Image (cartoon, rainbow, N blue to C red; front, side):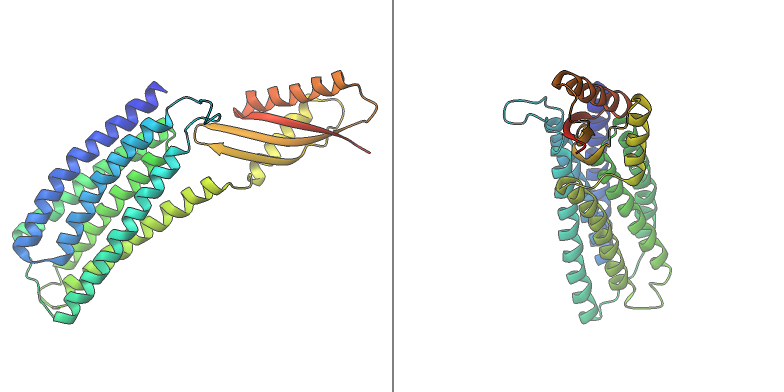
Length: 286
């Protein structure tokens, strides 16, 4: 838990400070050049700062211990925070699609200068560095919210790469800036979809994978001399806390003490091997 807190807070504050600096530089460059793509990219960068504030708040809430109102802890706060980030990205993408349409309709041409080149190159390096650290911290802390923030940084870096490539064509085609605005908006929208689809699945609940089911069956069968017919396995994810419920079948003539002993052993094996807190329901084979 201390390690998780350290990585979430380090990544969050690094992202906030870095993105505010990059936003100011990119927005200034966008105003100077009149580029909607650069201004869109600047607001995308600022949205990263907002998402990093959400990371810090969500991370802090998710670390709170279980209480009477939340007996399984507060781990799902991370999923909720990630969904907020995803929605924020979707709103930004929609806004810049509208801006790109308006620029196409006005047939306004944008001239990219040295300022735009330097600022965009700086943004690519800075944002990819932030993305790499966020992904590193996500693995260390096992945090979905840090992974979501990493994708936010990555889409910003990729959008800057596209803008940089498009600048080379800016002098040849008047519609380059509007087209770049469209592409950046679509990339932001794709990142939003990836985050939302993943996190909503986690909140709604997913069926355990075949690989996990096979591993559970293999471990439990190895522990018992008699078949226990493990079935009806459900997994409930609460962030860093996972609950598992399942059914087993035993001979009807077994005593309650024997059944209880086997159920407890199943729970202990699953806890030891997978870290899941289990509830086992016994039913007669007949």
